[in-house]
Image: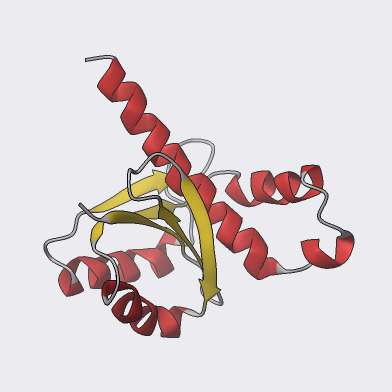
Length: 143
């Protein structure tokens, strides 16, 4: 059994989060440039298995995809082709950056720390991944 990787994709930076081995909770892992994703995954696979990817998918309030999907869709296709045996799930990423920023404030991160956009991306990835995990637990408990 592998871990699940959460991805908050951005053109400049990607936030990466990972589950614990039991897939109960998500933790922020790191921020990387999109160009560094392949190297990151290759290094990760040397020590851990990946069971699935969860990619934050931007939708508008009317549930239609936002304009930024034109950048994310090619990444998702590439991910599916490179790792055909690993499912790629899409998760609504509405408001995750705002929630991440607020959680930094609530957690006592100072102004200087809150300027670290990479930290916001990592926390956003963890929020996306934790929401996915929680949705799975909810649907399993309803069966």
